[in-house]
Image 1 (cartoon, rainbow, N blue to C red):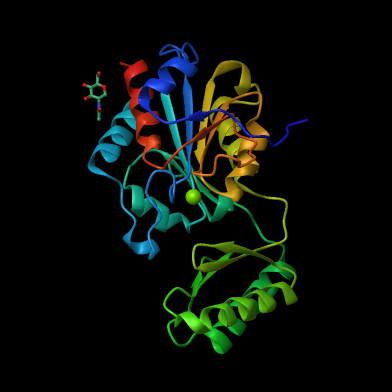
Image 2: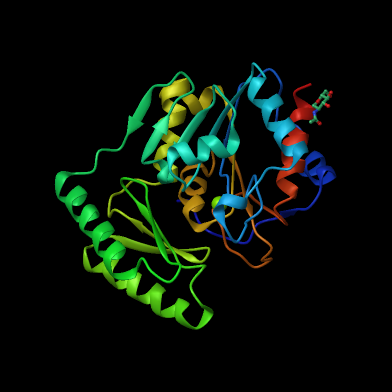
Length: 272
Ligand SMILES: *[C@@H]1O[C@H](CO)[C@@H](O)[C@H](O)[C@H]1NC(C)=O
Ligand SMILES: [Mg+2]
């Protein structure tokens, strides 16, 4: 059974070369599954001001174009939003924690919410909008999940908005997850970034993908742990975290977000 534990840390390009020497082979296909916020980009106060460094952008474009590399971005953002953040054509994108997936060739895999959950979802959007969309707080409607943002609310009122939003979301049976100055409402379905990662891998490489390819996954958040758990033993996962005591399903901890750029550089080096 996969388990969470404290794992070895990687803090530089040289660490990848020494701790993972021999894992990558330029002649074996590599599936590179990546989170965006806090992983490829730093976390910004406002989600619209995140960006990729020029070098990260260059590395991602080069890796995406490599014939042996298959790239998928799996994000909590809405699908169109994460696509425009990356701007790389022909790769696979999963938005809304995998509820919406668009393969590189344009094929879509949308998780269909049961009608009852869709109805409750609409009720939650309406209730949050009517009662709490004021004083800088706002609702980002992503069609099957939403984010309630309260970062622009006055400091002394933020806690109140947060609790009120959580209460509304949970009263309709949805899950309320803490995000960066925001609450995410997710439908109570057994679908997550891990299920999305498996769907993407099976779709691309077939049921026996694990025998044919190498897999690398990187993420920084609790929602990424679902993918790390399902990939434990078949791929190599990296959890971005500055906390030396964090317990994770990943195989390695990346000491800081910029180390993700070293990860990309290491892959680029081994594939050229
Ligand atoms: C990727 O590797 C190639 C070959 O070594 C190199 O020319 C290129 O500059 C590298 N890309 C980046 C962005 O470092
Ligand atoms: Mg993230």
